[in-house]
Image 1 (spheres, rainbow, N blue to C red):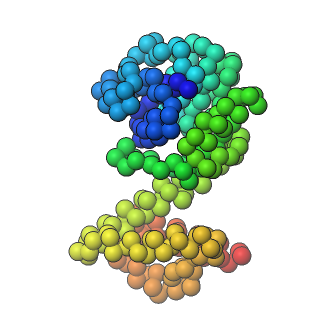
Image 2 (image 1 turned 180 degrees about the vertical axis):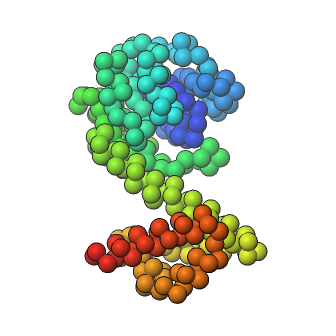
Image 3 (image 1 turned 60 degrees about the vertical axis):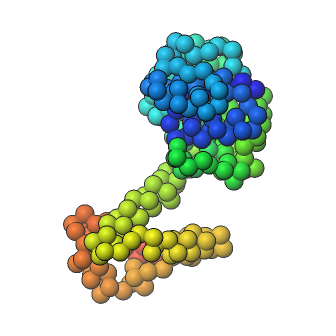
Length: 254
């Protein structure tokens, strides 16, 4: 199977590596920055381009892995060539291809990616959507080359998945950043938090997030919460209050 990757960011980089390792031929890599296209293409012996008009026409699958607000522009800039076209976005609906492609779908790997850290895709869930059953079968087979966890999900389900992922990953990581600030002010390294974080995540394999909740807000320990708030700057104090109130309300309701 010959694949063209349109994009050279975190998701595209990890997909190119994994697809190539799984035996797929990466024919070409596009990036709006020629240097980025060349760097990624060189890792798998592919051609590189920064010109959408120069996208190779003879591939089997075209994977668009660019910023969400650029997907429609990419689709509009390249004529249909009868191949399968997919994007990797959690939030962009499949209808972005409607009227511009005949064979299309979504190829969404729900994971946090970094160029510097290779991803083991074996356990990464892929969420697939396609315009026809035949295209769905081909996209599912492609995902199955990388992962043991491939699911069907329509555009609305995928939007909700993406929101959930922002809460579970992006917001959580920002809170770790704030924790790092607090520790830094106390002259302590962030890695003292790692056993706590690991245990918190491990518990989720046996308990629901709701059942796993602990801490002063869960106990309604107002004195402790007030002392914490007094130590924080205005922005962190506001976040602490909002999250503590949310925890208390959620556990009062249930």
